Image 1: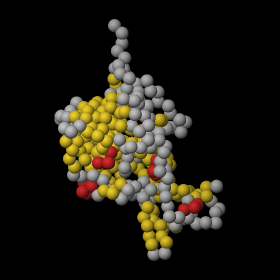
Image 2: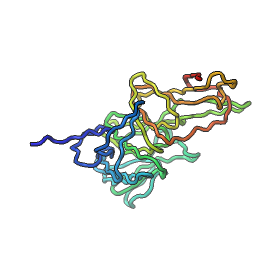
Image 3: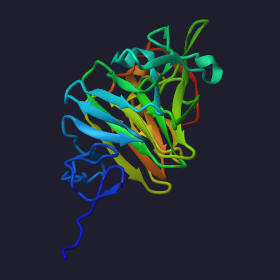
Image 4: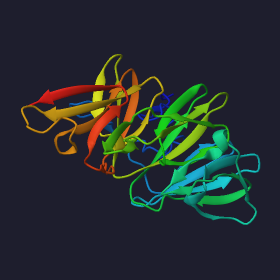
Length: 296
């Protein structure tokens, strides 16, 4: 009798019998080889078009490679929640209701309020960010949590709890009597947690997504808007660099570079097509806890 074949997913860790082309938990291709750069970054495993994921008694099929869509077939006992602007289409029998959240959900996107919504099966429902990039499937095991930069969340299963916290990454600039506060990472971050049963979280990344694990006390600098998600054990701090020997003050935008310093242990992920930070060019007067360095 031959030995039974098994496959351990390089992304979510699920062990299967390797009888399918993709991981049923996260959609990563079974034959994907994890490629790690010398700096320690690994590109997220590729997913076949129409990869099918299972959660509870329901299924999610990821369709398309450039502007991906999450097409879900919800069982009667399963439900998901999402920000209202990512809904693409649904069957008439799928029930849609608003979802009450902490702080009355006082969150904005492009100045407009976000509404957290939930959908109850049975039936089909689909979601899309309507933008090019990658759809990231994050299976969460009981007791596991992940912190996500705001406005990247797409949809989560009902057994994934949601909370948010202040990022505490900020600086202020002043011009005369006018003071402005900037949040390079965003004012808030989202935290998703599965207390009892496994859950599924879907995110949208612009460009390609890369992940690495930081050892205890290991640090790395990333552009704030490039951050996708991190483990709650990873700590954050602002980092300011400037060229040495310049006549202009380090507080001047033209001669300063703002980074996000991440401290291990834990996993971090970044996106390649991040949004460039905008600044009014004024002097920094105050900032959250930060490290500084002069170079050149």
